[in-house]
Image (cartoon, one colour):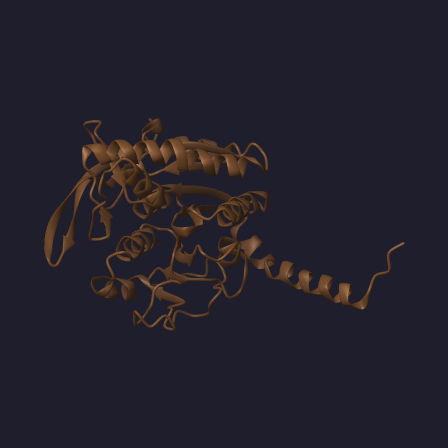
Length: 322
């Protein structure tokens, strides 16, 4: 025999309130594609890895259509160190020599992607790993970065110029969760290292995703860095465009990706703190949300806003099957 206490009943009511808060978001996002960029501390902490995998599976079981795009900066740096190869960054991007590119490709497709696929598939045969090379998903073009007003060479670092989304769309339509590593060939077949935020934005645009959510290691975008009490909850694309030149180099690729996504038709793009357990669920299914959301300059009534009223790269060629 077990006696139900008043305290336990109150706890259950509190849980019900949390669940019902998610209802309008489930109704808004049901059946829609959500692209999630997996990165930062969530990739190296075992508890956060498992929590992220659970979050992605939860989205899928709730009727959303998640797509995960990942980098692997910490793992790449660790492997390069083991091999005695120095890591170099310019303008927030990893300088990628042919030697470094071999390591990037090995780590992203053979380690990071496989691990995440395995964690997701502990909850059912859902995840399928692939890279930007597979099925001709992405085409890259070598890019530079601006440092102190000058363009600097990054080596085999690319920007996405074309996305052929139909292979990924086939997986989504089959109920699978694509897990995509951020490498892709150029038109000559030379493999390039892609910034995962940039790749996620291009894929979100090509898929017509409702949301882009990028995990990072800060609470969001700060209005007055380094004052961490100035986290911006929401801003428009134009407001972000004005801020870009003043941002710290590490935030520039992430916020450029958000800008690219919303100007490419994605309804909303958000950077969230991946150090917070289940941050993805907090962003998608709570009224407060978490992190910094970027909206179009004239946001329409597509979904309810979790934070109230509003307080680039090249265009991607979306190829279609003939």
